[in-house]
Structures are given as C-alpha cells and as structure tokens.
Length: 378
Image 1 (tube, one colour):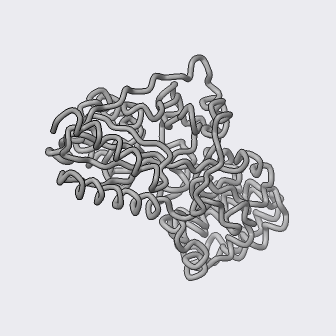
Image 2 (cartoon, helix red, strand yellow):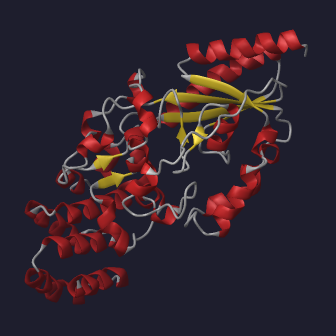
C-alpha cells in the first residue's frame, strides 16, 4: 500500500467513524502495548483481580494483541461519549434509593457499539480487502492501554481512561486489521499532583496511584463478585447497587465533559434513582422484565437483590425492615444472608436478637447462620 493510499484510507476511516456515531477514533500499532504486559503480570500476581479467573486465563492474549490474532498489523480504537446530564453524586444522598452507575442506566452499550463497529469493519473490508476482527470489552483486549497509546486519553491514577475532550465518560471498542496504517501519537499523563480519585474511594480500593485492588472496588463487588461481600466493605457501598462512579465523578477533567447525544445511552426512568424497596420485591421474572436490554441483567436476580439489601441496610430507613424480613424466607441463601445483615443494621439489638432466636436454628445454610451470629455480636 502506498503512503497516499494509506493516508486516504485513514481519512476515510475517521470520517466513517464519526458518521456512525463514534465521538473519537485513533490508530495504534499492536506493539504499543509491550509495556502494559508487566503491569498486568503485577496486577495478577498481587491477586488484585479477585475471583475474575478469566483475567489470568487469558493473560497472554490480553497482554499481546498478536497473541490474540497473529495477523494484526494495526488497531483502530474507537470511543463513544456517554456523559451524563449531571454529576452522578447528585443522587447519592437519597439513601432510600439505589445508585446505578451512569454507564448502565441506558441500553446495553455492548449492543450499540458492536453494531457500529461491524458497520465500520464491513466498510473497511469492502474498501481495502483487508481482514478485520471486531472487539468490545467481552474479549481479552486491554482497551484502556490501547486507547492511551492511540492518543484518545490517558489512564488516570484510578486506572480508568481520562480524556481532555470528554472527561471520564467514554465507551471503548476496537477493530483489529491486517492493514498497515500510520499510528497516532500516545497521550501523556495529565493527572499531575491531583489525587481526588484516590481519596474519595469509599472502600479504599487504591493501594497506590495507578493501582486498583478490584477485591475492594465497589464496581467489582456489585457486578463481578458472585458470593458474599466482606462485612467490613458493606457500609462503604452505601446505596450503590450496580457499579460505582465515585472516582470518575470527582475528576477535575470532567469540566470538559459534555452530555451524550446518543439516545440509547439516555437514562431510563426506572433506572434513575429507583426505590430500593421496590427493587427488593422483584422475583426472577420481574427482574428479567425490568432489566431487559440493560447491562444489569447480567448479574442475575440473586446478586442484584444481595446488593439492594446491602443498600437497604445502609439506609437507616425503618420502612426497610418489613422488606428485609420478607426476604428472610427467600429461596436463595445469598439473599437470606444479606436480609439478615440488613436487619442487623436496621433493628434495635433486642429486636434483632428476638428474630435470631426464632429463625437461626431452622436455617439450613451455614453462611446465613453465620450472619445471624455475627449480627447479634455487632
């Protein structure tokens, strides 16, 4: 391919990306990720990935794009702005209502972005004859380091991507191709001495700048973690029932953020500060109906109600007591255990002890019995 042909194709890619609704686009060489492999090894060696075993299982392909696809010669990295209309912290004070991460309040971004990526990829194949592969974040691709290497932003001290144009609110996707395309310049770090994101974390998930211990991260705990959330971390979760925007929302670079123009990412009314008591009443069919087409559906009803009960326990709302009491008889031990914990926070000690005396002996699950015992001990 001649230089002029490559340049023409590059301009075509950028123009088509914008026409398809992407807000930013850049190109990077697969070799640009070489330095990220060491960071990934360190992250895994420290156990910071928690029970996300798939991260360790796919580490080789994740660290080296050519291990994922040996034929790749260039990577087109694309970004879509999902900026909210107002700072997400505005709803955090209403403890009787659940806080859902901004990215999950609209349609599932995987569906929206993958469709656009496929359109662009098909166009690229038709124009150049090159082979392509399309990835959103369900594949072992280190999207944030790639985006930084491509110049779309930089990984801040919270390890998330920050853009000088869009602040914290970007969805990422990529197209791997056999084309040799000129790469863009990487973005530099612009965090300076700021540590707002580190200091605001409710569960102290950052051991050091640019390091995240996912085992303490509210996003990991409420979305990825399948079991019981450690008791010492539950109070810090507050009313967050799916994800957490704390470290994103405080970033000073959000002064440049703009509201998304994509209707699919506009918040659904039922996902904007929903009442916790209403969510706790959802059975499996109701859960699937309410969250159809939403990223929340992936956690399943049991984990979601676990999160809701933790939020109810943190709400200090007396009206939450009958809601939690009803879930003491739920079919899922995980739900029953969190109902016990919520009541240990909501009831006076004598009333909780009376509940324990009536129910603890008849409980078949050891983890639920342990919650009764630990709750009475305070």
